[in-house]
Image (cartoon, rainbow, N blue to C red; front, side):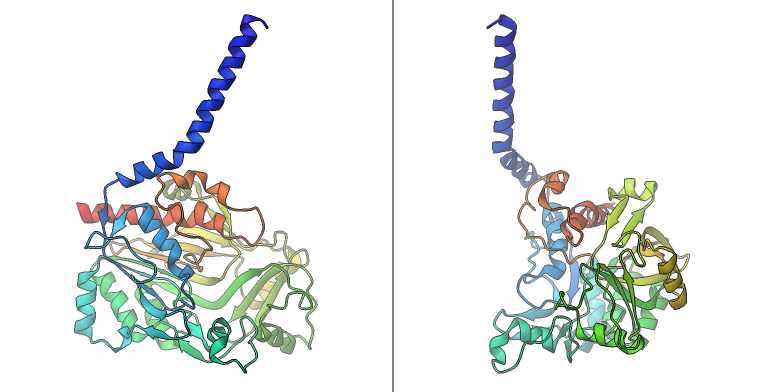
Length: 403
């Protein structure tokens, strides 16, 4: 073996050992960097009314960001997804408790808005009887399970008058407010919705939607009965769909189906962000979003950070025009004035993640390793959109508190 080949072989083994050592010790290094990052005290009022079990998935994404960025409570402890929120609290055995914010006086609400630095209202859709019974079948052993999405009586949910009053107090005191779908759609009452829209210069069009991987009702048994029945009632009993697509549902129970290939060039809704905003927030320029969203409008008092796009063909365009549904509409908006406010027009904090890796500094740079490239996965949304967006919003706000 020549001298040159021996040197190359030696170099190869040195490099291989370095790579192996990095793979072994990089988690420890990342944890050390996280551990020695200073804590950032920030007192956050979180409201989540759609917590059906003890996974806390509906607000877990927020807790991940808080722990990763080392935001702590006034007592210097980390936020717990199990305890550090208000709303609906399941005990895991079929019983629950709820917060009673809607019973508080204006003076009591004022104490809360003084105490906390900011408010984040996640999913206020709530908990319905059929979903609760399905989650805890031992409560009614003789009752047949309900179908996923089947409509039933509301146990707890919707934005209430006093909760809106609390949000407006945060706004008046120039404290950060982050809200997301579902806060003003059903089951929030019309009167509360209108007051919210006036207070935050946003308007719900009455439409909500989401991507469905398989619209074939003979195969996808999880399609909600009300969705099938309402569409059939409006279309002479027909349900002709076999592909994936996007369902759009109005608050008057009208149903519009955009089927892939029939109405859509691209089967999924995509969130688009211009160069200026994607650089500032560190988010993807194009991000698929396969979960629930609401179709909103906003006034010039708010800045549009990102927009949804429904990539329809001519047939899809005609269908949207018939129902007066836009194919481009806001996904993220931000107040332009000195009252910091963000609205996420989707179920953004609900992603199938765990708290694993939240204590590893810079782990977000490797987020692409933790999800598969399939249409309906939502982990990529967390890593490429939600995490950097919320992290930047909180950092910007925290800096104002430090000044």
